Amino acid sequence: MASGRDTVALRWVEGLRIVKGVSIRGFKFYHDKSQGRLRGETIAYMVVLEDLRLLHLGDIGHTLTQEDVLKLAPVDVLFIPVGGVYTIDHHEAWTIIQAIKPKIVIPMHYWIPGALTPLNPIDRFLNIIKTPRVRAESREITIWKDRLPEKTTVIVPPSF
Image (cartoon, rainbow, N blue to C red; front, top):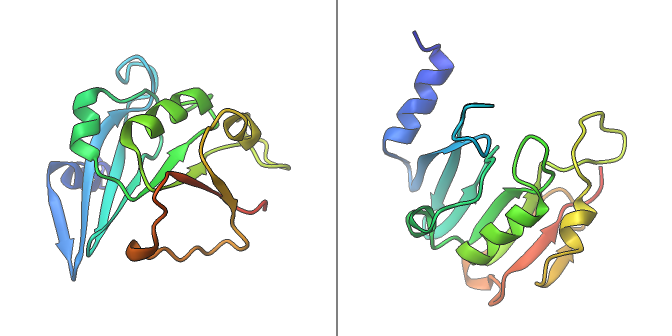
């Protein structure tokens, strides 16, 4: 029997939910490269705020198929893990970014100084990307649909 939390997650995957101009849709993926046999499934969330499309890939552990890309695109803002170990690594993240072609990329799930989690640092990702990057000045970022960059741009969160 599924716990309440699992049940809620499955409901999100089943369909699109709309609340006051915001829609959220879940997409089931795997947390590993072995179709979930190692770490199970995970859910990526597409959040649409009016016409701004944000995709949070959560703990995805594998690259996307062409069919996945077609389901998810277009994407304005992509939140993507880059730290490897428990999710995709920096090379796999770059492969997904090139396939989806989001306007803005916000890397996540990477090692930061003082953290005990054995993830790779963000520098491994930043050293291989071939796209503009901007370092965020604060932990809050305001994004406007009519001010999105023409070319994919990585916004690097400030260090904690």
